Length: 323
Ligand SMILES: NC(=O)c1ccc[n+]([C@@H]2O[C@H](COP(=O)([O-])OP(=O)(O)OC[C@H]3O[C@@H](n4cnc5c(N)ncnc54)[C@H](OP(=O)(O)O)[C@@H]3O)[C@@H](O)[C@H]2O)c1
Image 1 (spheres, rainbow, N blue to C red):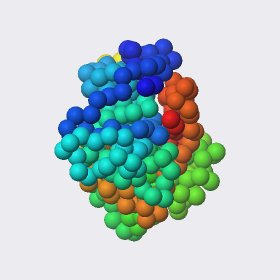
Image 2 (image 1 turned 135 degrees about the vertical axis):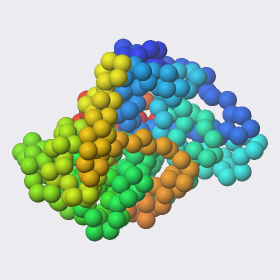
Image 3 (image 1 turned 45 degrees about the vertical axis):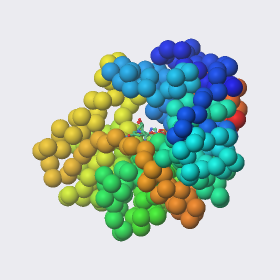
C-alpha cells in the first residue's frame, strides 16, 4: 500500500516521502481500516520537524512501525481481529491510530467510533486531536458554563473552529479573534463577536472574559489579565512554533508561574484522545452542533505538500489528505 513515510526529523519536504510499505497486520484485538481521509493537525508538523527536541522519543512513538505518520482518519473497516465485536467489515468509522496517512491503518476498536452519518469522510477525519483539544479545554479545564463569556484566539484554526462551535453549544457568549480574511468564517460558525487581530489588540479592552482559550500565545498573562474577569481563567494552549531542545514550552510555563501571584489563573493543559470523548464528538456532530471546517483536501500523492502547507500556521479549519 502507499503511505507517507518519515525518514528522520526535519522539514517535511526533506524527511517525508510517499512510498510503498506493507499493509499493517491485524492481531486479535485489531481493526484494519481502509482509510478514506486523514486530517493534519499542527502538532503532526511539529513532530515531523522534531521540535522541541526533548520530545523526540514521544514523536517517534506516534508513528507506525513502518514509519508512516498521521493520527486521525476516517474510513471503512476492511478486517477485524477475532476478539473484536463492536465493528464488522464494511462499517464506516472514524478515530485515531498510528500511521493514518496511508491507504490502510490498523487500530483498536476503542479508538474508533461509527462515522457520523451526516459527515463526509473528510469531515469525520477532522474530528481528531484539534476537536478533542477544544472539547477538553472548554469543558474539563475551563469548566465553561452557560452565559459565560469566552474569548478564543486563533479562532480560524484547527482547534479554534471547534472551540467556537463547542462553546456556543455549551451556551456561552463567544468572541473569536482572527485575521481580516477569516472574520466572516468565524462569524458563520457561531461567534457572537469577532476581533480582527491585524486591526485591534484585544488585550487593551475591558475586563469581560471569564475564560480565554489562547491558541496562539502572542500575549503574556499580564496582558490577558486586563481583559479577564476578577476570577477569570486563561488556558494557554498555543505557543510560537517550537525550536531547539525546549522551545515552545517556555510560554505555557511562564503563564503557569505568573498565575501563582494572581487570583486570575493561567495554565497549560495536554489534551488526550479517549473513547468517551470520541462518542461526545460524534454526538455533537450528529446533532449538528459542530461541523468540521475543512480547509484544503490534498490527494495522497501531494501529502508532503499538504504537511508543509499546514506547517505555515494559517489553516482555515483543518486540512485533509484524501485517499
Ligand atoms: N494542549 C494541547 O494538547 C494541544 C493540542 C493541539 C494543539 N495545541 C496547540 O494549539 C495551537 C493551535 O493549534 P491549531 O491546530 O489550531 O493551529 P492552526 O490550525 O495552525 O491554526 C492557527 C490559527 O491561528 C491564527 N492566528 C495566527 N496568529 C494569530 C493571532 N495573533 N491572533 C489570532 N489568530 C492568529 C491563524 O490564522 P491567520 O491565518 O489568520 O493568521 C490560524 O488560523 C498550537 O500552538 C498547537 O501546538 C495544543
